[in-house]
Structure formats: structure tokens, C-alpha cells
Length: 274
Image (cartoon, rainbow, N blue to C red; front, side, top):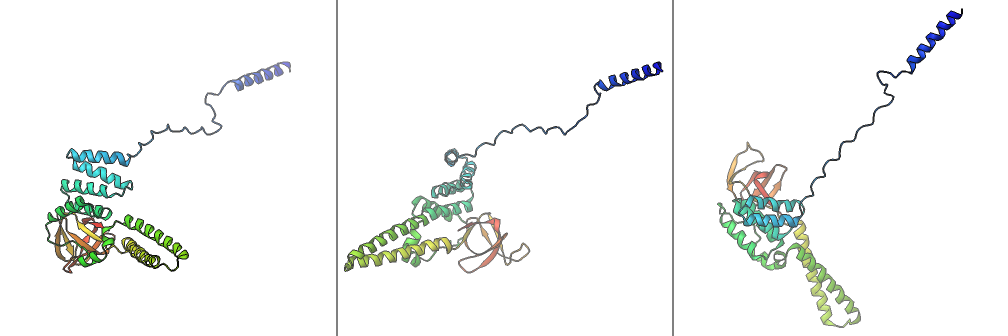
């Protein structure tokens, strides 16, 4: 009996010693923590417009016109809207041999700087280089004379003029409260009101009623009778030709020439100028 108990306790002690030994394969009681990826290098800050302007001008002076175009277009992508930028872009396009884009850029420059003599002269030179003898879509001379302020002032100049004239008009009205018999103040108020209305109408026309036009980009394009490559080719146009846009679709636009001819062109062949 004692021998049996001794054997029992010996086996129990041996089992306890085994239980105290470390296991050869560790037991994972919980999922290991996810290791965070090392911090990536922060992206470089985009170049400033002033830096792009300097680099573009330097590239132009060095004769690298494609780089100059690239730098100026980067400025556009950053939201810079400036007549001098479009003028320089037109010069770079012209020297790079892209007549269509050059004409479009000069026209955008003149929309913001309508009295700039250099832009007017360069646009005239570029137009003389166009192959098609088609007059650009321009308003009649009589209309340009009668509405001289609309065509000789940039939209921001019209806006400032509206604010200025309106302010003076209200000042005159206040003075009329104290000098009701003054004919000078009365007629001044009438003239100022008429000027404010004319300028305001011009501002609305600039924003909502400016007809769209386009400039041909490739050396030669086909104008189709319908919006599709399989349709009949009605006529052809060449780089730099300016046309009036009468309908726009996602991939096609319909244009009209001064003689009334109409045709459809793929959108990527035209640079639309608002």
C-alpha cells in the first residue's frame, strides 16, 4: 500500500515538472498589432505662378518654346487668368509653329486687354499667316462704333465703371434732396443713370451673350454634313481659321462660315474661344 502511494506521488511530481516546462510552440492568445508603414516622403509643393512665369520667360528667351508653353499652361491650370499671360502664350505658340493655338491665345489676351497694341499687332500678323481667306467672326463696324464702350473695355473695367457711375448717381440723388430746383443735378442724374444702364447691359452681354467662336488647330480638317465620321465631307478648313460656333456636343461642334456654309467638326480639332 505504501509502495503504491509512493509510486502515485512520484508520477504526480513528474507530471508537475512537465507542466512547469515551457512549451516548444508558443500559443498566440491575441492577434498581433499591425505594423504601421513608414511615413512616406511628402509630395513636393507645386511651383508658384511667379516661378512658372520667370521660368517660362527664360525658356522663351532661350528659344525653348515648347517648355515656355508648358510653363504658361501650368500657370493657367493654377487658375491664373491674365491678359499678359495669354499674350506670352500666344507668342510661344506662334514661335513653336502652332498657329491655331497662337490665334486663340491672342484673342483671349485681347478680351482682357482690348486696347493692347502688341496683342492687336501680333493677332493681325498671325491671321495673315492663315491659309484660308475667311474673315474672322467680328461684329459689324457700325455696332462697334455705337457700342464703343462694350468693345473697348474689358469685363473687369466695365464692372468697375458700373460701380463708380452707380456710386456717383446715388450721390447726386442725395444732393437733389437738398437742392430740388437744380437743373444741373437733375440732368446729371439722368445722364448717370443712362450710363449705368448702358454699362450694366454691357456687363450682362459679356457674361451671357458673347457668341462662341473657335479656331482650327490641325493643318487640315474635314467638315462633315452631320456629326459623324461616316457623313459626307462638305468642305475643308486649315490651321488658324476662325469660325462661329452654333452648336456644341460632347465630341462634335457645328460651325458656320461668313458665307453661310455649315459643317460639323470633331471637338478636339477646334479651340473654342468664348
